[in-house]
Amino acid sequence: MTHGLRSLRQGGGSTLKKTLFAVRDTFTQSLHETLPEPHSSLAAGLILGAKDSLGKEWLDKFKIAGLSHIIVLSGYNLTIIADSVMKVVSRFSTGILPSVFGAISVVLFTIMTGAGASTVRAAIMALIILLAKTTGRVYEASSALIVAGVLMIIENPRVLVFDMSFQLSFLATLGLLYVSPLVKERLKFVTEKLGLREMLSATIGAQIATSPLIIYKMGTFSLVALPANILVVLLIPITMFFGFLAAIVGFINYYIAIPFAAVAWLLLSYILSVVDIFSSLPFATINITALSVLSISVLIFACVFVYKRRDIFSSEIDQWKIEEIN
Image (cartoon, rainbow, N blue to C red; front, side, top):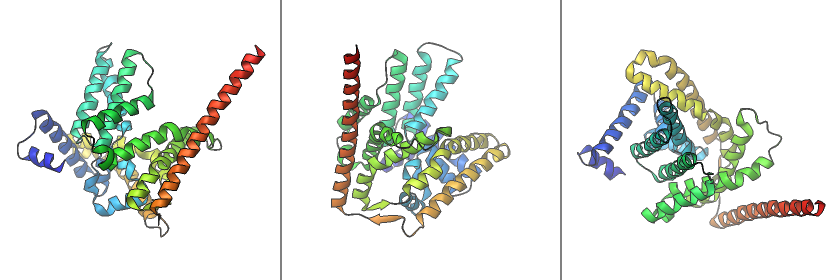
């Protein structure tokens, strides 16, 4: 990717890529003009996945706190973009056109942000969602994930072994699909207001699924990831929203953007404070051996398998009872 950016600066690359990278750079520059550091870099990470500008010190803190995933582009970002574009287009046209523009916006945004492995995976799944909506078919997330993974591996088999962002993205999605529902069943004591139970189960599910790989690669496990995520994740959408408004309005007029930038600054300050506090705790991480990683992986697989088999068995029993009654 570095070579690609260097090539673009020297005049290489297509006109489309040059234009999209110029838009991204303009947007990022507007963020830096309306927000101080490291707030502007965090906002760029949340909205565009441009996490490198945060610097090694802050990136390490996000890793220790178990919050690196919030500064990596996901399907959530792409879904927001596609839905927004479709709503605007639907005011002027009906039929297939809104979906077409939504798909185009997903592709363009993916290219603009550098088309990293996790972003491409999210983009393929988002496009499958749009296709399902347009054709009136049922969207099956697990099938979409498999399709996305197969397409990416065919295009570049190296991502399967050497691209950790692809591996984490794939595992996190698997966690959301198969582990989070099991966790949600055990969190009935948590209120559903503001989507708290859903958010908490999704966070735990993704953490469980990705933990073995993170431990294997890093040799450490974050003991503060869960509470840190609970304190932060719910505020990510609104933080992205005000950061986006601050950048767009700031590009037009700096003074008009001040109220939006002020709200964004407060939210970003809170996130940075949580990361700073949790990452500085002496017990934030522990070292774990490769054997422990294998044991954890087997345990996770066994738990999911047992619960899934239990649900299938329960369904068969219920069906048998119904047949007996009839």
